[in-house]
Each structure stands twice: as structure tokens, then as C-alpha cells.
Image (cartoon, rainbow over all chains, first blue to last red; front, top):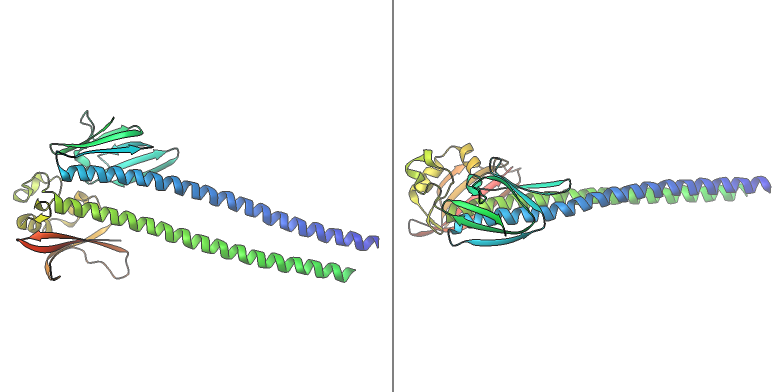
Length: 135
Length: 160
């Protein structure tokens, strides 16, 4: 009887060990997927902000002098004229999108490479230029 | 008793095998859906770029405004004289511009493009760029415009 009981215990231990291994593997997989989903969520928010800014610049340029667009942003934004992009950064996540009027998008100082802080951003047209500023 | 133990472990192996198969299937479906979602994001980005590019073309005269008279002063492309009224001279010069220069000016270097101007019955008036290959991913944006006092359709296709 004792030998049989010991055999059954080993089988149970083996079974528990196997289930434990699967459980650990699933925990790892869960955290890996969760991290990927969290990053994707941030990326989508950054992309949304990026396209808002890029659309506002485009609209301001097209619609002319009377244009005055105000946008709220939860992230810092960099306009990189020489690389023709808007960059939105949060921690390690960086998203960029294109701007069409890259040489003509400037800040109040006239630079086409500049950073705007998170908060409210005003976009307006002045001559051939689109001017962005924090308000 | 030994037999009963064996049956229990067989049951366990069976259960683990079924469970593993289910997990593998879930993983494959997850990866497929993720790739599909990423593809859809990429396609949306392409669509936004195409829309922005056509917006620029149909609603603005370009910088400098009279660029069609002297291509060396061209900084920003634009084909209109008024909102959605296409200039004959501008569009004619646009179609003769260097392909890579247009991609650079419209900031669509990641994509190939095909531009068409059609009359309201869909008859081709003029075109430029590269025709999309059947196997590629492409996005076409159509804008209704006026050309020579008649309704027309400006179409920009981006493809990779």
C-alpha cells in the first residue's frame, strides 16, 4: 500500500509541476502581451495628436490668413522642418507623421525646428508661413 | 492501483495536450489579428497622407503662387486658382514635373503615387506618376473639382 501511495504522489507532483510550468509560461505571455498592448495604446494616442497637429498645419496653410486653430495636446511636440515631420514623444515611445508645408511651419522666433510643450497650441497663418505657439 | 495511477496520468497528458493546442490556436489568432490591426493602421496613415496631399493640391495655389511660370521658385505644390478650381497651366506643369520631386514636395517618399484628372464622366484628361501594380496595397482619394469651368475629378492614388 505504501509503495502505491508513493507512486500516486509522484504522479500528482508531476501533474502539479506541469500545470505550474504552464501557468508560469502563461503569466509571462500575459505580461508580454499586456506590455505590447499598453505600448500600442500609447502609440495610438501619440499618433492621434500627431495627425491633429499635422492636419491643423495643413488646414491653416490652405485656409489662409483668417485661420486660427487651437489644439489641446497631452504630449510635447517637436516640429522638425528639415526632416519634414511632427514628432510626438511620451517616455520611450516616439511617433512621427509627415507635414506638407515643412519649410513654412515655424514658431514665433521663425525657426522651423522647435518644441512645443504639452497644453494648448495655437496654429495660425501669417503670410506664406504657418506659425505655431503655446498659449 | 498502478493501473488507476496510469489512467490518471493519461488523462492529465490528454488535458495538457488539448490545453496546449487551444493556447497555440489563441496565440496564432492573436498574432494574425495584431498584424491585421497594424496593417489597418498603416492603411489609415496612407489614407490621411493621400487626403492631406489632395487637400493641398485642390485648395491652394502653391508657393510661390505663380510657380507654373518659373519652376525654380516652386516651394509648395498647389494646383488651384480658387478653392477646388484647378488651373490648367498649373496642372499641366504638375504632370510634367519630375516624379521624385513631386514625391518630395508632397512628402510622400514612402509611397509611389499615381495622379489622374478625369472629367465628370470618368474620361481621363491627364495623368502622371506610376500606375499601381495589381498586387500592391493602394489608397485612392478622389476630389471633385472644377477644371476649365466644368466639373472634374482629381484622383491621387498612393501605393506601396
